[in-house]
Length: 134
Image 1 (cartoon, rainbow, N blue to C red):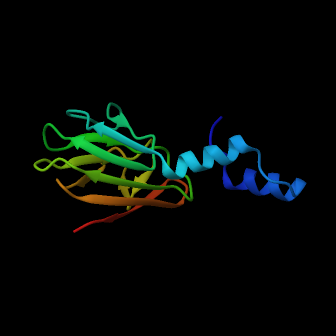
Image 2: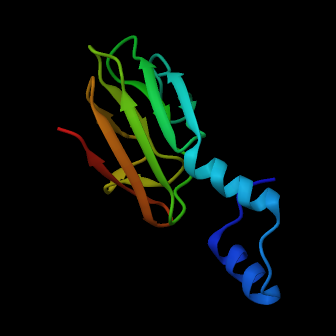
């Protein structure tokens, strides 16, 4: 079962004034606390980069500068933390479809320096905002 969206959760709660089913609560918890280790796709583009499917991501290796990872579609309320654990090479983070990252086209993507971290927050569907470590 996919993650329920905010409106569905509110309608479900308000309509019945009962607790949510356990599988929904588990899906929300999984979405908030999930983690993923991955290797950036060599020469990756928006179309070919490995997809991120967790809230907390550790890029364990970047073979050459600008190897890529792909964000999920930007939906309001989503937050994704990414750490580039590679000590030498920057990774490229691409947005999905027509989504943007700080007004940069998703197909262009943004760089995440070696040994740096970023928090990406979506406050409006289709638009990721990024907050990068020094």
